Image: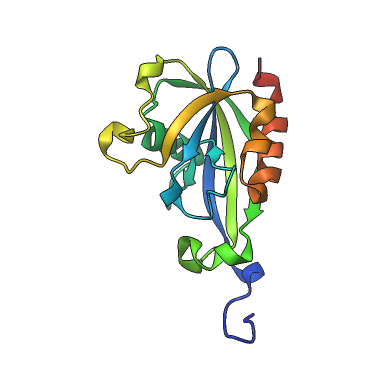
Length: 175
């Protein structure tokens, strides 16, 4: 269905398939990166630039493999072990003012499968400025370890329900 101006109704658009990664260190703290301001308004708003790694699933790609790939492409981290997979897919809708610009207006938001991994490497492995061996554009300009319970308050508000679900699914993995 189209609006009076011939623009597709957002509710008629599909969700973009995506994965998210909760990377926990040995103390049960979670990796968060600060999105570069060039990432766009679908990711960054004043005071809400911190998030966990996430990214799209390529056609025919298994969600677990996409999670491993996205983690490496955003952080250079590959020394991990799987702790858990969220039991459900979690979706969010983009605000209407952003939906027309993000992903060329083809999606209403994202539906995400989340994985929790234990970081088994040394922190020197983390390289957000030249991620994926320097083969990928940086998405973060800073990173830190954070308490799991604080994650929902750090994320841009329209993604907050997803982060609340992720924290609930993985709560037992925190310190």
